Length: 342
Image 1: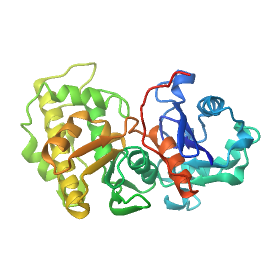
Image 2 (image 1 turned 135 degrees about the vertical axis):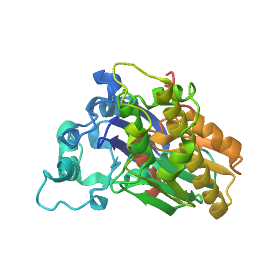
Image 3 (image 1 turned 90 degrees about the horizontal axis):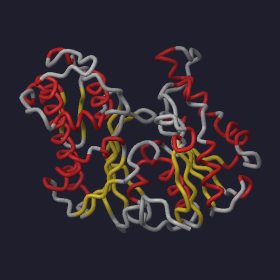
Image 4 (image 1 turned 60 degrees about the vertical axis):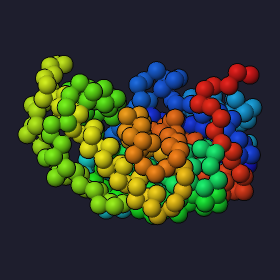
């Protein structure tokens, strides 16, 4: 089967092409448009598609849009909150759903020859999960996804047995480890949804002196967690114009440590439920390499495999692989994240 994967809902729009279960090409739209993260993560941008990335992927496979058997779109509007008639409510959130439902027609217009009836919606966190468990090379593995948000949740924990994904736990919004870290990023004077890696770096300059208080604010119990509406000003003032103090570094260090603790408990609970040797990771939180290292050191898993494209761009690949598997193909492991020379 020839499957085109599309990520277009939030940010980092991307496309991927999978043919007979093999990854032929994958690319982010920003590589062609030169816009950082492809587009802003707002409902009004949901209509924007990774047109250049999709055309490039098709070119790498020597295919035309009419040759595609299925399009895998990494968001399922049926799982999103229903549109109640007022699309201006909740920051125009319903507009996102309206645009997603029209994605088949948008795609058919952007890629002439593509049939709108072949578009399949894949739940956002399932697409994240598939990008990890179908790429890591393990016949059986646990999978942990944590990011800002999907349709209604921010987390998925499950097990892949070689044939199917069993979802064991998820966390409903507004609780979100990804949004927690984004909020901190903004409070520390960085760009949210983009500069989280700078917060991870700033944490190395501080001490987790605020950890005990944050343990009361950010709670975890087995496979569930809660992230309250934290008043960051209690810990350090809003940093502006690059003016950071020791308190800002300590706050970053404290949140980073608490994130690691929560992930370690979630992973430990998942290991107890699955008894798998391998943990496959995806979602934006899996880009936190410091936390990934702690998962390797402090959990019973023998192998930790984060998807290199753990953020939303990777859902284009995950959705394509997931649909390809459902259509009878057997995807092999992801051999490299680099562009192959032809």
